[in-house]
Length: 140
Image 1 (cartoon, helix red, strand yellow):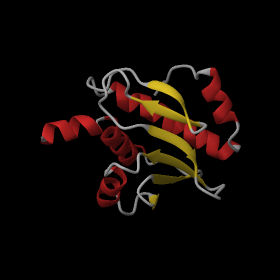
Image 2 (cartoon, one colour):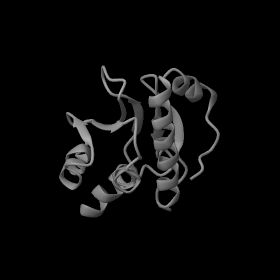
Image 3 (spheres, rainbow, N blue to C red):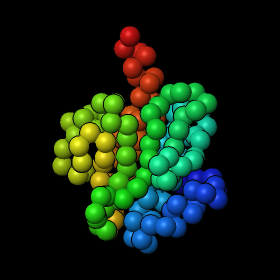
Image 4 (cartoon, helix red, strand yellow):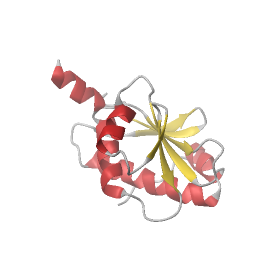
């Protein structure tokens, strides 16, 4: 999985994380770009900062909901993938993967920083986020 070069300000944000969290978040970043590439309807991602954290937007197509990367609150052992709390995304992830991830409220999917990245279930979650608005339009 390859991803484009990091924009300077996003690299600064990644570099501010402790090494184990940074490594995990960079793995998730690569998976975000690979997942987006697998869906023609997603289009090019915009990589920027939201609230000082790396964020991935589907600005060109409007197909999805923003994905942010950060750290678990008060935790050196968890990286966080954050989603808009006004969506049903985390609720859907909980239903589909009740034991695969830890969740915090209706906005965070937590990943342990050690061990293997659960790529397949995480890719499904990322895909649901990147196509969130497409799925909602189809149901209308």
